Image (cartoon, rainbow, N blue to C red; front, side, top):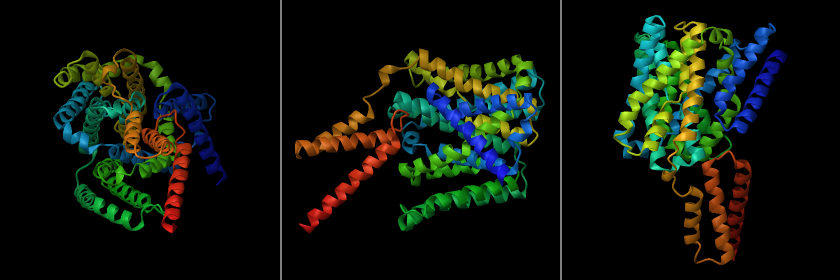
Amino acid sequence: MQQLFTIAAVWLALAVVAAVIANRLRIAIALVEICVGVAVAAIATHFGWFGRLGSNQQWLQFLASTGAVLLTFLAGAELDPAVIRTKLTEVTVVGLVGFTAPFLGCAAVAHWALGWNSQASLLTGVALSTTSMAVVYSVMLETGFNRTGFGKGILGACFINDLGTVIALGVLFAPFTYKTIVFIAATVVVVAALPLVINRMTRLYGHRTAAIRTKLIMVVLLGLGALAYWAGSEAVLPAYIVGIVLAGGAAQDHHWIRRLRTLTVGFLTPFYFLRAGMLVSVSAVAAAPFVVLALLGAKVGAKIFGLYPVIGRFRRERNERWYYTLMMSTGLTFGTISALYGLSHGIVTPRQYSYLVAVVIGTAVIPTLIASLAFVPRHLLAAPQVEAVAAGASAGAEARSPAAGAAAVGEAVMRALLDVETPFVDSEMLAAALDELDLEEEESEEVADEG
């Protein structure tokens, strides 16, 4: 047990270092964790200590896989169904082109230019067809575009794009046997019944310390994950579908989602992304940089040439078109998951895996930087959400005393800041303050009732 605790402590210490770096640089934590994993593995290999990191121990692989499953579930749960309904044509067309163009382009480059076999080439197409929901969502929050129709359209297109990646990964590489039929049937039954079960369990037992919804979701995700592995598929496939199904219902409880995100990002996903980085061979990438550049150019080029004309049908302004296109050209979470799936199933070699992850890291950084520096459509930024909520609270407080009105506005602003979840706000402090306000309101109501 001492060795397990020591390894876990070292890995979480690396996660803390990655979190500090990500906060300083204002970039996605997953990207930094992968880079820290690459650096630590290179140093450990140089001194002959790589085996001590324990990256291939089963308990650590389980934590990493669970982190990937929960992160995929959260990605599906972040979907706003209203966006899909109101912008159905836009998000569907942009999302499908965003998946198809790089899938075909990268697979062709890997097969015809690099000489990889057909399976490795198809896996390359899948891994580099993605759009990073994590990167795009972070950028949308920081810029405020998540509260505009423009930003919501980008997020909806990301969902369609990543859904294509998830389906392609399952269809192309999962063997189709009677186990596959059992897996599909079980997934359909569970997914159909889950919203009703979750809603009923929430009414009966929700908002208590038992955290029964979280336990039930973990049962479903791990159970379907076990079935997926039994059928020769991947556990992230049903997780994404479960998240999508719950997006319009249980996932609208933002406090519950926030707590689940804390468990996932705070404890589980560091093991996944650090391990993904540790499996990258720096020497392999350094020995063949032109392979990385060829694949990077294939992905970004295919995204640009495929998406820019299509996005032009929905967005006329130049900065809007370029910003939309470059955001759709990012990649991180699903690209890493697909690449690691290929490595663990022997579809790609460790050297090819290293190339793919290097390209994924590049696509997470380069398009984002270019879009943020040169093509931000600032004219689309609406009034901040905090001002809108505060204005609403002010209107509702006109009949009160000045002090009561000011208190209402302050409470509304705090609740808005808590919902926005910017990196500049201490969410725990705000939550504690709001709890105190709620308690004071309850005490006031009790006194009024007694009076």
